[in-house]
Image (tube, rainbow, N blue to C red; front, side, top):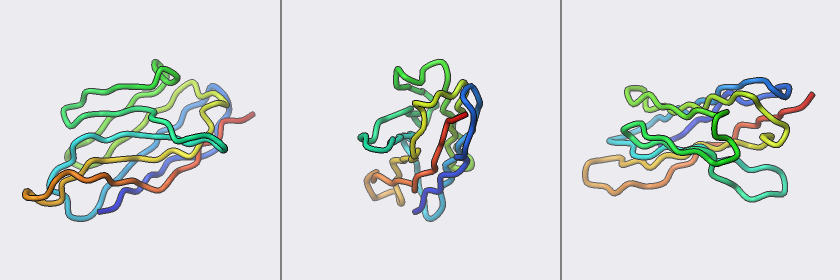
Length: 120
């Protein structure tokens, strides 16, 4: 199983970006999906989570600006980021709890980071 994050780039303050997290490989079921970020010199922090039924939660720092969503048919998660601020600059990582077969437990999978830079 692999997670592929994409959509990062350079954007001006106040701008928007949409990140995608596509999964591939043998997947029986995906439970929670999430986005984390890690700024230079800082610890990785949770940005947003979404359950398989679509219930979302957000870090206080992104509430009202970011929206997490998922397409269960495509096993893909998204992060719509609006009103971006310089402090949002970080590598963004996607996460998913995945069961690869009916008899296996859920396991943690991570995508590679996609860099978001917010600067004028």
